[in-house]
Length: 436
Image 1 (cartoon, one colour):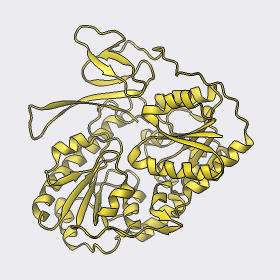
Image 2 (cartoon, one colour):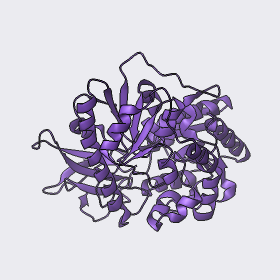
Image 3 (tube, one colour):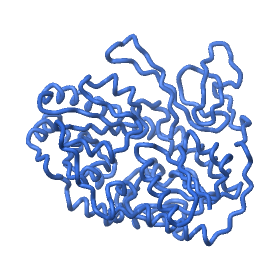
Image 4 (spheres, one colour):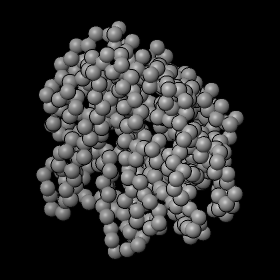
């Protein structure tokens, strides 16, 4: 069968999706890997796959995509890029955060199979979400597959270079609109503004610390920065000192980490990735609401404490908190053994062999402005309008210079905000981004 794997974010998902594609090819399938946001709909109509591997469903654009696939006879399989949360953590969250994890929209009528990391989250989805237990498959910790070769962790690092500190940001909503910054929730949810403020405040502390650390340790360390999926490097290139190397947005952590000696993050699974390479890390100004994931690396709240720890850290070994890591693997991640993609491919292959595919896919995605609403956008230019170009379906519409709007042609949520340069306050840049 022809299977299309759609990658949501290059830096987090591309390596994993390519590994999954290779495992599927070993089982006899023809597989293509395409960018989700910028190419999935075009790929569906041009390549006409029998099945697609789709990112986690959150937002109306994704709902519309899988609904059309189901209508046209394509098998839809969802691969969760994140591990989710444990039942213990889920029960402590408010309704907004719970919806963010399980999904606001009922996607189950359009999804044949969902691939998740661990058993506990699979049970949680079947009890609190929309999928039946029989349609969920536990595969293990996808994110860590790139660190294994033949079942052995790749602990070798490039040490023939100056010692290097990596800042891994975690503030994906800091530059979005506070009215709508998280695509997994509907407009009007109070959590948009709450999350925006958490990320914005934490990033402010990070920027002050980066400047101070660069000044204090410039003769001892090299500095690099990698943005979280959803963040723009343009913002950081303007904010950090010139001695900090900012990696391109598509850079994969599995490649970047091989050339660093210390990781500073804000509650990221990258702490486990660093551990697999024998790299110590610190969680500074944590923004991760899951205390288990946040607690797998030493947490630091003040700049003075971070500076002190950097001065005494042992760079020759990981400082992971091992009881917490074991808890993560047993309760949430599933096995960290480099075989998640192999298990996923087996589940997909078995499902497709048992289910007949009858396709009726058009040659082009329906292009009518079916999502047009009278909310300040126009199909034709009006006086004072700014030109909006949808990066997904490439159609043009018109409206105010800034704001958050749904594309009237494909329903993708697009944010347009103005960023003021710290180095040159007169310089203002309009940043347009899709809410993935």
